[in-house]
Image (cartoon, rainbow, N blue to C red):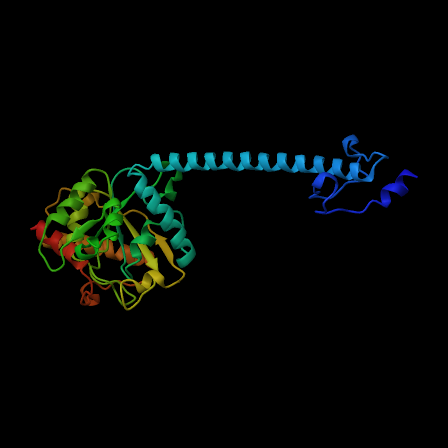
Length: 327
């Protein structure tokens, strides 16, 4: 008799009932919970009681969800602050790396032949081939994976001064500790600054080909790169970038999706040349050694002076300055 009476009670989803209240959920007529059992008297009283109980449960669930989300946000903010604070080169470097990590992964589908060989402690000179203005991004990507627990490091790349001084980009370059070069000048200060940073235990990145290379094989390196490696007495790490995007302007490669691969090579030990007089012959010998190893890592050829092309970028100034400093 009771079940027959309950079965006749209409479902009231959002329908106004007694005292102007609404029921905004399903009504569990046959719930096993005592507080949800229908009473046998007063159809509207029963419906109103269920609506009140359901609304109270919904309000409690919403409050619990808000507290949970707030706790997650606090924990996430704490982790981010901790990660940024432990970056040895400042929170700005950490922030730039996070942006770069997402951008390079999604736009250029970055991958590598193995875990990065770049050290997380001590100085190192990083040499790479130069095919695109985007090359520094690919060299810096996941550089700390040789020991992820040690954190992110800035790599001081030598770059053209006119790009270094562009508003907005200047903030990025300064925080990444880039070394500006004067296009067409004979300023030795960039070479001396690079040497000072290596002596201080920093990472310095350089493209020994000088300008952007339009070909496949490596161009000849200026002996100034060899001078920097010998004078600093640091290991040299070759990094080869495959399939870097190109374009008709400096901006176009940054907007051209591609599939970039980076090959890391073992460090080049130049201890046999430490203490030797940096004669022109010695510098050319060391430069050829560096470029041969870089070509080996990239699976391309290096023919020395036979592969020399006219540079198309102000990056050549970095090697000219160092060569002059060697004299």
